[in-house]
Image: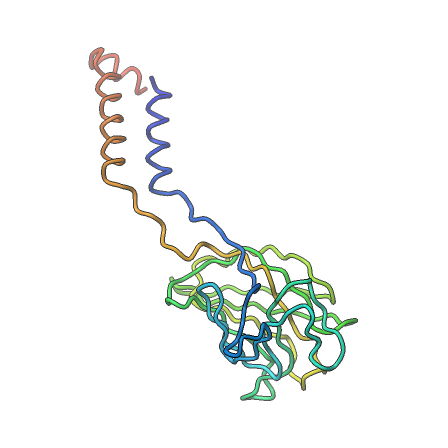
Length: 224
């Protein structure tokens, strides 16, 4: 009988505590106002997220884009990139701020990243402001080929800054690129239907009554 009680309790816990699903945030199909897949807008929107750039060079580009200065490192798909110092402060490294368009928090579990220019290595600094207060950060070592990075602690993010480690003119820094960000689903966690909760609660109460129906002494003995 005890195992049946445990089953019902587990079912209730699953309904109330089941984690939200995750999705891969890529940049395929991204277009700017002219219909071009190469987007140099300062603020880019993609799948419910905004990306606000502050760098000498930035954008969401296709794998064929080379910037007019030779081939960039690419992963065969459209990806976000930036390189060079801030446009507003030459002493500050280039960056992009990621946030959810509706203002809600989000979580980031992993991403793919690389430098922009061939034969370079660099650092990607991640600085997240958390919705519940506090912050979390990480530093990723980048090479001139895309690889995956798993992240820990980037849960409940209100605002995420992705930043280069050094400030210099465009072409004098390795730059950074990101793609395939693994984030939680943008929709809210569904609320359990009252009818489902009521049925499971009644089933739990019925099992408890049946379990203890053999007498108070047996019931207490079972609880020891």
